[in-house]
Length: 295
Image 1 (cartoon, one colour):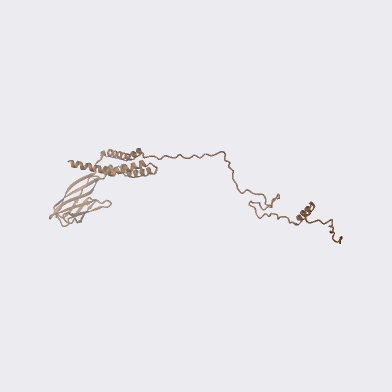
Image 2: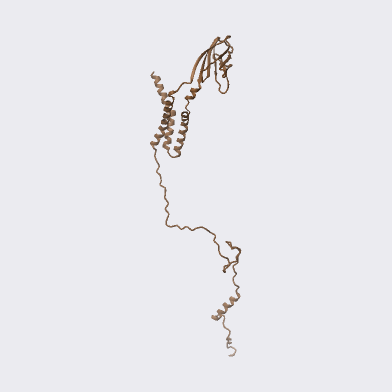
């Protein structure tokens, strides 16, 4: 019995599972390295740069990298200073500019008026009036020739007469661009009906007409002549153009004043227009009324 209960001895080459020494650890690492497969090798599918179709060299799987960004590198030295524009103070109403805009238009107008007065000091009237007597054998049909002076032309003719208690008038205006002008007769005591009774021929300066439902032994005809040579000499196109450009110049100056921020000057120009168009005519009318009342 004693022999059966004795423990069985353990062989010399067998050790318990928890008895791990350095030799066992080295053996386990060598076995793991033999069984574990190597890691996958990298494969180059494409390159960002142009490799020219040549395989990678120098042991680099991805080839030689190429530059993707080009340019120069600017190095900032020190600090940069940015100037802040000064804040402009709001200007008040400038009375000097206002008075300038108020009086300059009147000064310009006065200068042009003086120039016109000097240029017209030698003015010669191109108009001439003449009254002629026209007679008729039957008191109805008239034919007369007008004799203008050199460089003159008939502008207007007028005559009045009475028949059977009614007043009649005869007149014509010269029509430019045509060779004839129509002569009209008007009953001034009735319905003022105007009837064409004849023609004035510019080529031979002749009037030919017949009275309508009226008669007169003779007619006193007033003629108005225009000397074209004198009329052309009296014209001054530059001065006339200057007066025509005054309103345009005033408008441009007013707009430019407000656009450039010179509001005081603009208000002065606007005030000058009000004074010139409304205030001065009203003042002249009041003075005329006072003068007539004093008389």
